[in-house]
Image (cartoon, rainbow, N blue to C red):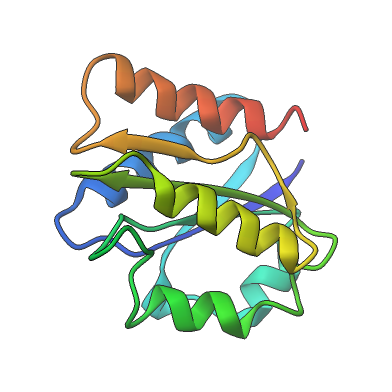
Length: 142
């Protein structure tokens, strides 16, 4: 059984909803998953994961959250080399540049980024809820 840690930051709750739906997909595909707010996450949790799933909304000028998530990402930059990593996040404007930049950054650290990242505009509902669940399921296929 694969061990997956979902580490996320959420301001309005949209990214947290995504995290829970992705977790649901992972569990339904037979994975073991732990949901962690980035403030409760640690490098040890990253090291212990078969797959690390990271989530952040787009903030400001289409960047990941800068006070907690960005410093955490920097702190794990050495630990994720060669590790399977998946990224997700919500946004309210723009075209998803924050996710493209984040994928590029993680690949630059040597991570094996899975499924190009998942972005959902605003809160997931209807079809976008299903997208989150499917994203979780597909992670275990990689």
